[in-house]
Length: 145
Image (cartoon, rainbow, N blue to C red; front, side, top):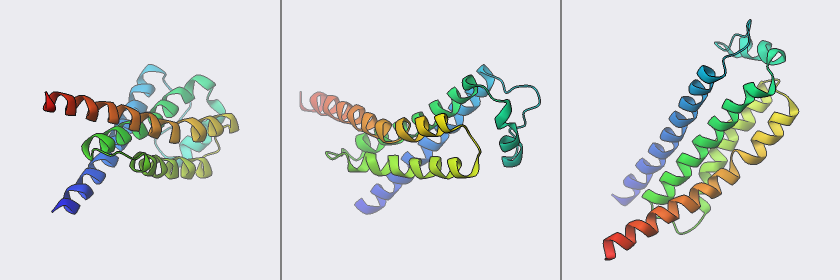
């Protein structure tokens, strides 16, 4: 039964991280609308729109990638009461794989690819682990008092 619970937590944490990613991306598009003529509705339209984008248009994708990884790592660490960083880093690896895939299929600027791949995944996984551990410690302190 414990294995089923762990698998459920894994699936849920990755799913909630993906939802967070999508939510932040959509919010970013409302706050910083795409330039006139940009079409983000299809992969081809997004690729063709890349030359129209300025650095401000990359804030939301970076924040989305970072938030998805962070949320997933926090949930895994907290819900599984992880004492090792490994679970959070595996979650970061899963999101990193998605980011690397996007880098390979979209002609985005090199500066963004480097920033995104170096800061949005593994550092956020470690930060998520740290936050998750703080939640576990605080929860344990309240339970034991």
